[in-house]
Length: 603
Image (cartoon, rainbow, N blue to C red; front, side, top):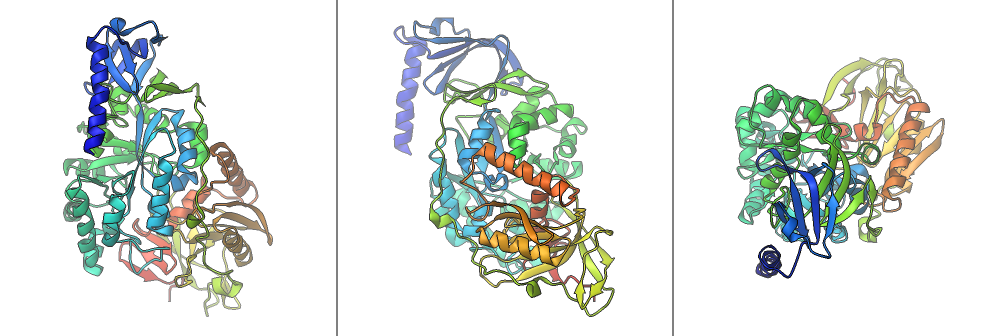
């Protein structure tokens, strides 16, 4: 660490020579621009000078222009600090760090903070370290915050590898890891205290160790208020974030309690418009409001953009553009303790987004470390493809499943069944019951009632359990979808109109060592192998994957009649055991509000 600062001091001395001496000049000067000053929340009509990877100064930079200085006329365009996504999962995009970076840099995202919670559930420290190693090969700033507890609800779900405080010293000392990720283990604060109080002890051991190293700890506090919220904050070490805030009242409460609210706006979880009302209506200070995507599919990333699109939506809610940009620059930089990014000032990295229009938030150019790396949505630099080692593949240990194993059975001819209700664009779910027909003791789905079979098939060979229930909201007319993506333990999630197609889809996912498979009328109609932890592909680049996912989504709609957008992500969240009300784990229906496992049939 001391060596790092000595090197930085030498570089800063060179910058001082340029500013005060007569024999050296800026490498690049951006003239006639509008600098977005997120420190003072103003727009300055001035120049910006760059030397090496650093911002040299903002203001009148004429004297810093030498014979070899590249001068760029900005023509009145806006110069913003590069954008930060403060909470995201590469696994949700199904992309490697490399391919996600390739797609996101062009829209102005220069820093990513990722939580490898998903690959951590599938592979444990081996998977998280493999992702941390890949970060060394990309040009943008990427950091990891790792899970301190896997699974989130011990005893109620089965991950590939258990993680606890015993792993923290090793993980938190690993390269590119800056703290602990979302603390879902105490999302259900009171229930955990009553049912598994040892979780608090283990997590406090982890979070206090992180605090001793000056590292961040992210929270995860859906629908928590009062005593429960305060307990959750204490479990994180006394200061945390939360990206699970879904209402204005929640946002107000958390801001007042000192929580950094990560206002989530991803592909299927859209909470920003509700959260931002704490600022636009209640006039609360926005310094602890941060924009984050959490989970974004590759097709959205490719077609819509990344943080620039989230900022645009925030501006559309009535937020001043500079204030919205603060939420993806200085606000997250302050939370994470990033000293070199998030603002435009002398000595900061010259990571910049050039914006042609603040309303549409169109990013025309991107600088990384002082170099123009993207222009007009095209990457100007080469980022080599990355292939993961075999140690993070072959995570599916389960043998092929039989039809008998997946049947939902009842002795009654018309049993009452429990149904999980999908809520579009949320990871919260509803609950209900329905009366279905049983044939030869096997309960059948009802397309007419939009009541379909849902399964959670344990894939790691650690018990071979299969959780079973019914689900409403997908509106499938035919066939089945299976995927080795099921937050957070990532067993094989299935939604189906019939057992035969469900079986075909499940076994194709097993055969492919993870991924997505769709079956209809007794055959696989399409699939996507995801062999890295059953979550990520290193066989397709970002554009290829975006097109593949879009084709799969279209096929789900046109061939299977699926009635929700981004169906694979919606399905994946129906196993999220820390998010109310009912979810499906490999153990059965998890009643989040009562912290217990339920069967599919109401006896």
